[in-house]
Image (cartoon, rainbow, N blue to C red):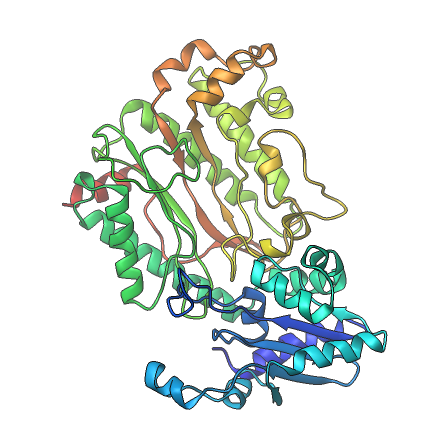
Length: 464
């Protein structure tokens, strides 16, 4: 945990932006795999972690804004807990660790909320994303589960997003720690017998290293030669010798801040001429965007700049035709680049997505597009100093999508369909890094992970 003062300051800033009422911030409970004594590995709600730092289940924070009183609610450890789990900190000790003066059993939440409701006070709470959260809030608020999220506090959501979007130096250090472990994982993979392995085996190998360092995957890893399936999960199929292995993974720091990197490497150790051409286009798009990222720049404009660079490269090798500006304007690039340039990153890999993707990534100035491809952009708003975001352009050859677009006359002016057949089975290339927006522009976070072709080939050929 951070120093208790950090959590107190975060809560003080939170309360200062809410006029009155009762703030309710429940943490998560254990989630059973198949019976209650066999739970999934526990990971606390990110907003609860942000304001309290406690990764124990069954906790909740109540802040009486009108009376400036904070209470940490939860169970006291029972004598029997020592038998199964060893000595556990008291509720008061947990509260002291995050700078909360008052404690109480979980049962007081119901009466506290009912008393506030009878008095006509506003109950501030965030939208729930798990069924057990919905049921808890439903009981506390006296409404049906399907009404819970409709009554969440928009003022609280907006305040939490504003706070969590801007990363402190402590948070950036945690993110860089997680990225440092990503680099160790990438190095370990290249030293492993990865060429004769499978996606599942590599995922298990990397997960073991992460766990041995007190970490965990931040999301299910993507380790595949089918890079054209954007969220493809690892399988047991051997890697084709001439294929491209796309690896997208991230881990958590000890304080649960996440990382997210992607590298694409040739299974043979050397890129073919066709692979090299596509890879260089993607790398050029990333470099172009990194040179432009700065406070005040709209992320959607960076996305479109990346799309333009990708289209220029694809035009140069004969896969796109016509005016590049027109191709990007109508969305022709989305055949090859159907996802967004990146997303916020912090305590969540898609930071604060549980609070509403449009609320986090868009605002009154910048609305989400409904154009195919561009509609998947998670972040569009203007960047601010100390935002942490991913930059991850890519090019993919998706056979089903190519076949669909070939039948649509709108695309014949922009896509050289007659030249795409050699790329069926190519897969995809994505390069992803994490940056922090600074007053001068941006800086890459974490240690350098190889991405230049010569460096990557040398690393691939140097492994077992």
